[in-house]
Amino acid sequence: MTTRSMILDVPITVSQEEAKVLFAVKLYEAGRVSLGQAARLAGFSKRGFLDVLAQQKVPVFNYSAEDLAEEIEP
Image 1 (cartoon, rainbow, N blue to C red):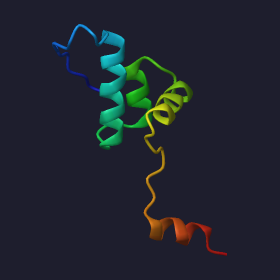
Image 2 (image 1 turned 120 degrees about the vertical axis):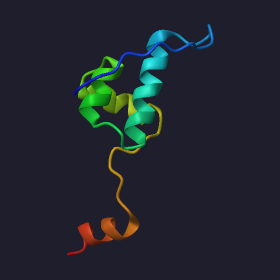
Image 3 (image 1 turned 90 degrees about the horizontal axis):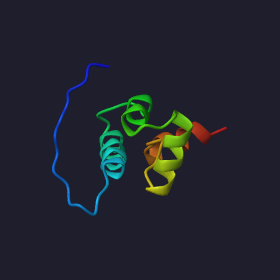
Image 4 (image 1 turned 90 degrees about the vertical axis):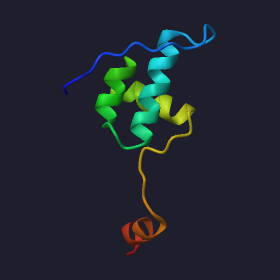
């Protein structure tokens, strides 16, 4: 993955680690990065980042109702 460095001013109440995690979550949620890329950006393993996504109530699988119905049909 090619990267870009950024300097970002955040409120003093937000730690650098928290900002990295939230940024990675939003990039993943928007479909801009893969799970692995988001995990690396946030400083987690894939498994650890899955836990973060669960805490943030971000779905890992983004199935439409039609796709899900098709998958579970016998």
